[in-house]
Image (tube, rainbow, N blue to C red; front, side):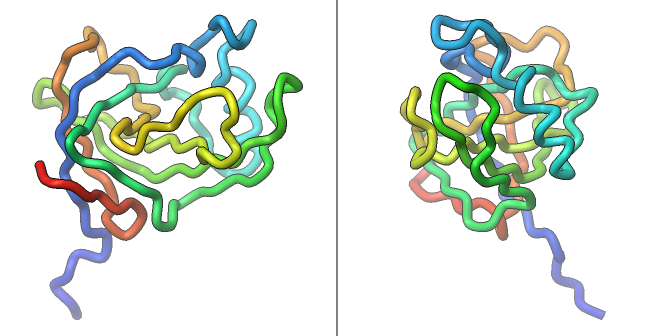
Length: 156
């Protein structure tokens, strides 16, 4: 029996910032929230986001950056809107700590090579989390991510 953690985690600190406001929508780009359209598709593919907040936390982790290595879920060619071509999405489970309380969540990663409308900043971690009462822009949070799924680089 091994004492090694089968699911090693890395703790990333960041600040909640305003995003494009597309996930929770509507926005200037979409007459609906992107997650309203995406959630049923993700559920039919095996990822049930029922109960999670219908938007993303945009967490600035500068000076760090991240990249997906091998996410728990990757969905290819998701056609969730007729306003642009299908997109690829990856998800990795995580835990968000805000004001000493932990919330379950998923790193939400629209693949930049298929995401035409918005620049995907490698220092911006997008997370779909359970509802966090009172969270606001400027709040500091910690995100526990799976090291075997997400690589973090840079100097904290």
